[in-house]
Length: 84
Image (spheres, rainbow, N blue to C red):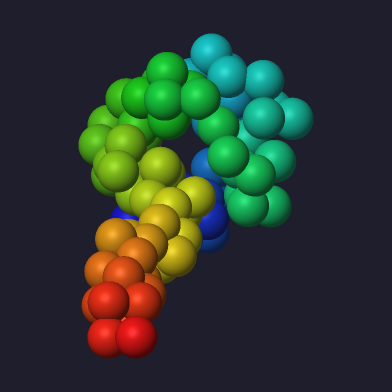
């Protein structure tokens, strides 16, 4: 479950989540807005949600498809260069 979904479904205020996790409310707002966070921050939030929002769900929102496709793109470019 994504953090935004967790907040919407449980109705927990951001301030309460911040208190439970020990994370600044401003940081939670930034994460909800799509800004990256530290691994330790993601771990704290996940723990505060009792695992309903997994560490990986928080972190994965910052990993774009471009990162996953980079090795494939490089291989395709290299093959195209070899053909010349």
